[in-house]
Length: 119
Image (cartoon, rainbow, N blue to C red; front, side, top):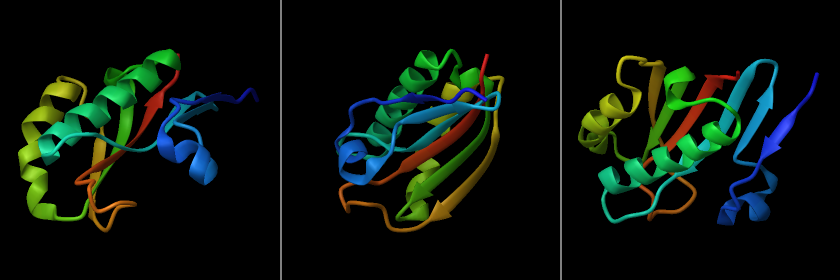
């Protein structure tokens, strides 16, 4: 089996020792991704942008996402992301879970992890 590793050059990739995404076995596994910005909505949008870029590089897309997990330090913030997520996944909603937990840095309000079909 061929494994393709995709790096986005994010600050935590080198510090922790992981890559943004791995293509293997017909799937693209995108690591938990945080975004930039002051609000959870801003961070959600930029995280989805980073994820979309990784999926594009892997030959996939948000439309081919089959599973998504959202991690938030405060579950009350999640509802503000719903319109952004509904727009991002459109007519191709994946299976999803939301977990309330602490993130790697207190400045982050959401982390998103996806699994998508590879072409």
